[in-house]
Image 1: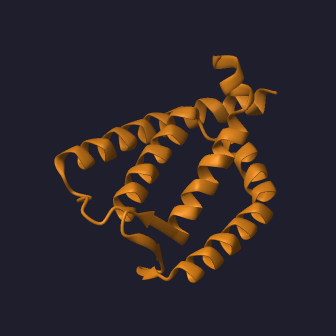
Image 2: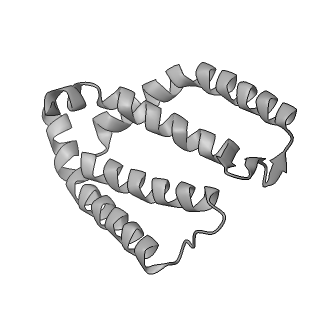
Amino acid sequence: MIELFFEKSAMILTGILVTFISGFLYSMNARGFIAKGRYRKKEEAVIIYLVAALILGVLTPFIHELSTIIIGIVPALAIIGILIIGANFIIHHNIPGWNQTSMKSLLIYLLGVMLLIAGILQIPEKIFLILQQ
């Protein structure tokens, strides 16, 4: 299972990045479809959703290449930290009643920052290993 995760890590990161990008383009909740900070009509929502899907579909190969480069350079702990910070931000951004500065949210951000720092501390070692090859 772990081997499959590492083998497909660039594809997994691609999916996560595409999801993050779509989270900035639009969001949906029980009350409706939100794009550019305001609720949209049904026909607008369908058009926005389809255009976003088409654009992200075209960009996916480029995002995949970027993911492959990121995984080759950035340590896994740093990537996980960035993903935790980004996920927490996007979720709170898309759910109107959730507070970015609640104690639970801040603890999640702290975990992400700690993983990011731990990953950054591994970068000199990773660069040394790359230069040896």
